[in-house]
Length: 616
Ligand code: ADP
Ligand code: MG
Image 1 (spheres, helix red, strand yellow):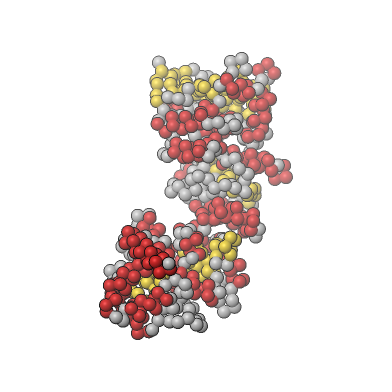
Image 2 (cartoon, rainbow, N blue to C red):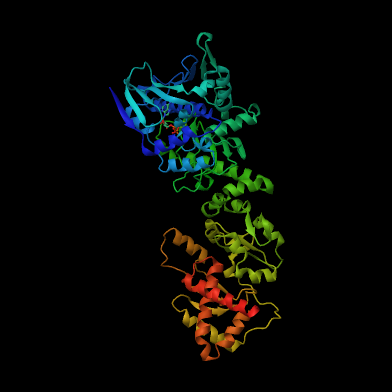
């Protein structure tokens, strides 16, 4: 008797994309199936440590590949943990992560669906790129019943009871007509060597009468001497654990000795993954204890701001017989973590000296690394030192705080920054005019995290770090321009303060502006407007909205004109109208929405028309 079960909607959607993609490197299906077989052996090995009843099955692990040219089938077998009926239904008929099909679909648009397939945790389904039908026979370690699973990869699968002598899984692919190549042992050998050489279990080609041939090295790569590992081998291993196709930007293989000994083989990808900012994205190093795979879900191995690092940590000094949950909080693990972080940061620091090289990394992951300035008290200074920012100094090239300091005047003891969401809006911010006038460089910080880290870094190498609204420098300079009359100005600011009393804290004049008539800012010490927008976007309360201040430029002809006009009561309604447009203009320059867009648009076109009429 067999059960017919439909695929979860997500699976069908995804399979449809995978099967119909015209991707040429279909051979990665083998890498994915071998990787699953190796995972299955890892799982049984680990399970056997604490469960004597399955220990008897956990030996002589190997992965066997057998091609049948006549039948045009390819079978991949392992003697790992196997699956029972529930496992089959939940692992091979659903997709654990919600939204995966959506991601695959979007990735498919860029033609890279197969490159990504392993990263989505759906590697198994890649078998359907080369096979019309997949047949699985599997038996879970410690259980008597074996199961048969078949599917054409279209509507669903069938499950029935089966016979199998030992635990593990056989996956038989009925190859498509155009996929006959995968029965060719020469080709198979080559694919295995390319993608799976570092797998820690023997991968055996079953050559029928000619016997069996072990194709890979079969020992954990990180246990070998550095000098015996080629860069291709490092790269293959990286691609295996990350399911990426790029070359790693950084490869770091080290052995730590001392109180606790451990080996790390860590990588930083040269491309950012699709899910770097998923809220549930955790770091994903694989933890081994003396070459036994323990888990890739121990999220205390690295801090979150290094979640883009891939790789493994192996230590023989960790206890094998405690649960993974307990292990999470082991003080030994804490030591490994801090040691590993130090090594990584040191390596990054070295690379940060070469701008052209480092900027690739920085553009991918800088935004994440900067979280560390905020989160990692111990390494704060180091992380800041290797961080790059936009600044008013250079339009293209980013700068470090140290470079900023080296350019600053002797008297300047402050590093100034401004925050916002768009680098171009920032560059043109009216708030920067006085700084430009005085030749003071300002950092242009345009990532959300930039609102937070300066708050925990009030000083850097003897310089205070300040938002430009908190600048305590004298913003006055010799100006030859005409300035509005003090008395009229006072009347204008009073009038506008009253007009906008529900919306603004106050209206004042400022010496900071040159070309803009007005600018919007906040009371000293309050949340910046950018931060406020961020909070709003994340549905955080705006109950604490900062008090806004509208600053007027007394040297600007528009302000001079308005302050003249306000002296005569009959101009009031016209001054009021212009004042409203000016407030809107200040909001636009800050990247905020205007309160009444149609009023604003209408007024602006009216003024343009007037000026055009005058011109003709
Ligand atoms: P991932 O390996 O990222 O979890 P896959 O699509 O490759 O995603 O595999 C899905 C799941 O199916 C695995 O997590 C595992 O539980 C199960 N599985 C696949 N192949 C095997 C196998 N050979 N032995 C045991 N379980 C397997
Ligand atoms: Mg897999």
